[in-house]
Picture (cartoon, rainbow over the protein chains, first blue to last red):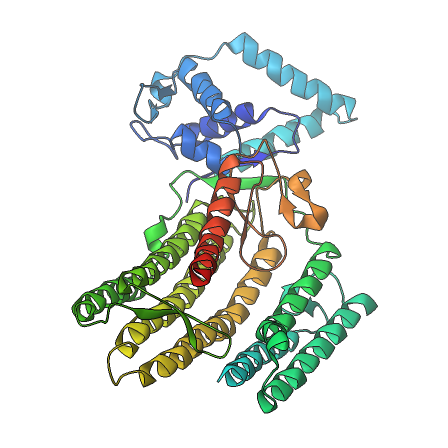
Amino acid sequence: MLTIEVDFGSDRPVYRQIAEQFRGLVARGDLIDGEELPSVRQLAANVGVNLNTVAKAYRILADEGLVDLRHGSRARVLGGARARAPEVEELERELGDVISRLVLQGRGREEVQAFFETAVERFFER
Amino acid sequence: MLSRIILASTIVTVVLVVWLVARTDRERVFYMDLGRKLDANDRARVRRVRVVTLGSALIGVAGAAFTPIPTAVLVSTLLPFVPIVWLLIEVVGAVKSAKPMEASLRFRVPLTDPPPAKQYVSLPLQVAQGALVLLSAAAFVLVRSHLPELVPLHFDAAGRPNRWGSPDELWALGGIMLFCWALSWLIVVGVAKERWALPTTQTEAYARASRRRRSLLVRMVEVLMLCVNGAVAVSWLGIALGSLPGMSHLLAISVVAALVLSAGGAVGSLVAFLAPLAAVQRELTALGGVALGTRPDGWRWGGMIYYAPDDPALFIPKRIGIGQTFNFARPAAWLILIVLLVVPIGIAFTSMLLSRR
């Protein structure tokens, strides 16, 4: 059973959490080319948020080229191959921010590397 | 006749309440997990319910032994409801003092559609419901042309008819049957529309338990409504056939049969389904909490009322006890509640007005 995880206690907005979860599912190959995403109404009801929150998450994924949004029909996965190539500099900036926060927590270089290795392991184990 | 009916109804409710009180143990008061050990207040609640139930039983027996004087008739008629109402008052007190496990703010949502309503319904029970309504209507159509111009439509406290009218007014009983059937479908849809939220661990086990809880809830309502509709059908045809010459004894038989069916349905469905429902509720609590995905700050009045404007859900699983509640921030919740109250009150009020005519 494919699921996405939502945390109302998190500081990250719910639409970003939804987009991140779908991005992960596509990256791992759990959602493949042509597969339908849940309808905006159904997902909003299940998560317990406004329709606009889910629509916003789907728009983010559509902007990244991960899903195809067509009026009147469900969003479809376009697959990783057609995804817009991410800006390497932008990703490096985001990773740099994560590294900064880990270092500020008092972790050394090796601990930061171990942290990333564990995160990568968990990502592919899911 | 009346005193016997009062006695029979009182015995049924007393047995039901005694059975519910017997469900009390170290962590459960009546049938509810309070999320904490029982304290002195809970034990006092149980004692009060026992005293009221015993008192009702004694008055019921006394009422059966002595024909009640007219002014006492109304009080005696209400007697069977006293233990139930008192139990509900104590249940509200217990719920307000409960400490339910806080539903986690972190949960999983399946990408597939939640199981549809039809997955929870029982085909044989639904067919039986439909057949009951149709066969009752067909039987009434068959006897309609043989009925006298006036049939008894309302009865006084002693069971004597005090209003007579056209047999066509009996179609109202068919309407009541359809209303009860629609009510059971409202609960089916409500159960199916509940949020399909799962915990982050033991997701599959929780999903299985959740499905079982929904099926049990639907089955309990289906059985109860089938018995209630059976009682209405018996009354409908009993009054119709009892109006035919030489068949008046059917009136009394139909009253007793209707009482047995409705009381048997209420007690039977609770006895059969309450224990498995309580068990599955405990299982869900252990696996990740009931009412998962609800807003903790949406639970008001000690967790009895759910009011969460930012939650689009309409049907919400209760945090304590068994069954569902509404998200009262949704206008549809008020609309459904008003319809559910207006229809029975409307029927009772119309019947009262007509009986005075």
